[in-house]
Image (cartoon, rainbow, N blue to C red):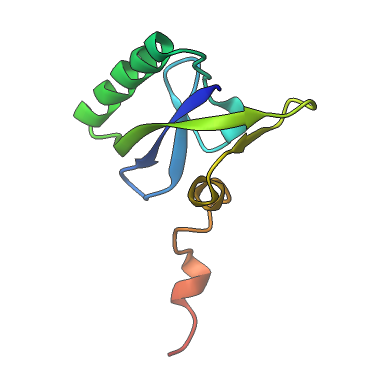
Length: 98
């Protein structure tokens, strides 16, 4: 089962995924995929450098499913929620009167 490496961007908390170029993307479909344990460890090593540079936090690999049409879906419900980017507050939320 393929894995991608996920984290939260440190400056705004948005869920991001490690991209093939070593950068970070908000789109799980653009994430680098690891097929085996060695590939996962290699991606984690790249991601840990971004932690040291204080770009991201809470780095970990997660299993995904690649569908016949090429779309990528997280396996767990938690990761599906994170991938939907509905776990962070938006400016509109702050404008709601209490």
